[in-house]
Length: 421
Image 1 (spheres, rainbow, N blue to C red):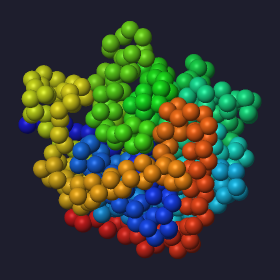
Image 2: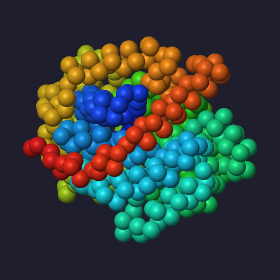
Image 3: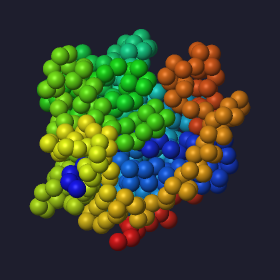
Image 4: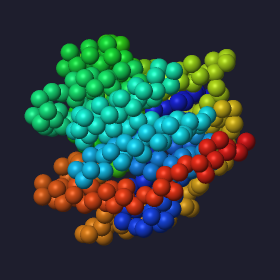
């Protein structure tokens, strides 16, 4: 049995709090936590992750199940302008979260969804809120950037500038930004991102599934951009597996580079999933590698399966083979997975039942608010159906936000540091 380290991986998921949007607040929060718990279990046990970055709604629910599992979580409330005046309230929620939550396991992040869903003046408001904290208390910003050609063209037509130009003008384009996707970029835009110190979260499987394109990863790396890895959401990927993401990042990176098989090699892919992820999160002094003085976040991977043998290069086997099993995981020196069993996360019995609940909701369709974002975004629906689904989704999110009481926005009752040893 050979053990390798894969740790501190930047993930844009789980995006799990929208599953039961049509239910009343108490039931919705209960199912939100159940769905988060199931994905935390998957992250810990199956896919070699000790740390993730999550952008979506109900971040406190994610935290409530993250802490008992012992996993590191960077997350924030997604900010989207639904056109009903609620965006200022969402910004307030995000600001409150950043100002009131920060522990050894939980780090708040400002999460404007994108330039095409948040008006420039609201992005400026966010930038002002972030800058007011000063350099001594930097806040990470997470955003979708240049994911598809359609997005880029429509935003330019509406605003007269690119999303990158918008972010630069409001003051958000800097080393504290983690920009998801970065698929379609000109050489000048690559240079701008590199100069600003922006971190790029590459999501190859999602980009392939949604036919978004292939990020020019090797060109980004050559320009000096810190490229890390993400999965995007489970609905736009169908997997949160970082081992698979490393494999796809390397293979797609070679294809997008032209004809150089040396591009984005297995060692580069592993670094993108470890040290580069830690750097993007501002934690490279503490995480991302096994060094004396660093925090002991460690993942042990069994490469002894027949599909991984013979192992001539352990890193190559880790990245390219399909049979490798996470056997043990330590976070801050505490073992949270032992012999492929998570100690504090909820297990298969619960998330199997929840999966059937999700399926039943989606199959009902019609008037259900439980529509899938992937279907609306991936051209799998005719235009009129996409419009209908988008409207229902927006309506459900509006109801969800408006239903949140002040008590539910209070994070003081969550034991953020209560991890069992």
